[in-house]
Length: 286
Image 1 (cartoon, helix red, strand yellow):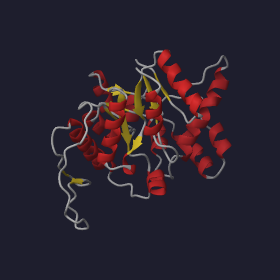
Image 2: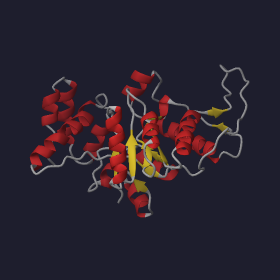
Image 3: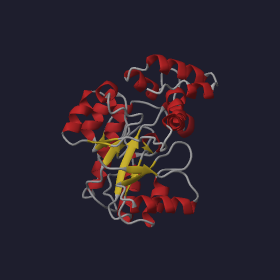
Image 4: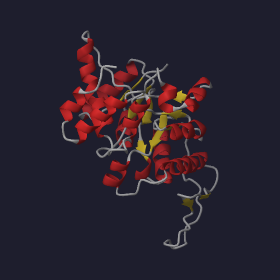
């Protein structure tokens, strides 16, 4: 097992201190995500300039926010500037952020992700003009609303052809596809005792063959177990209750597969009804 840490939104000097301390302590990696605030790449580039060995991963870059080529360009740039320390974490995010913040439709997540990864890997190779004819993406673009002037292009810069791609997924079908097309999985609300129930049998089999699973795990340190649980409870309450609409909350569905149907109902009802503190209090110790 390797340990990493998230690089949160911090004042500049504090962020530098956090990144450098993580490296001194021997952590394997630093990770930065994005939702509807700052992006994932710029803070990692800042940390890359002030460190020398720790790996740098996005958890995640949102697929609907960038074309596959734009994501690959960012990955190549950061990997090159950091001396090959970049891990490319991507994911579809959720409908509320995708349609509410980015203003694009949340459609065909499995097909979109598969084609996105295929294009990125082609670009990472760096030795040929990239052509792709998919259901969601075409390079060059051939749609009727285009000018028809696009041409296949060879990447103008290279780094490592084997830059690792990790995918954030928690639905069983998405997780199964991730084991087929990616180098690793980035799950939230990970329960190591119920992996098959929550994420499916495919990831269990893949892990036996060395497939990487990098869960984001909230940690509270202290002598009072209940006080530590209470520090973590708000994060669980937010994801179970508020990260999606009724019937479209992937995290709520996940904890149901773990066996917490009743708690999932109560937490979501309270959260969506505006009773946030009550929703958090309803997160059971189990």
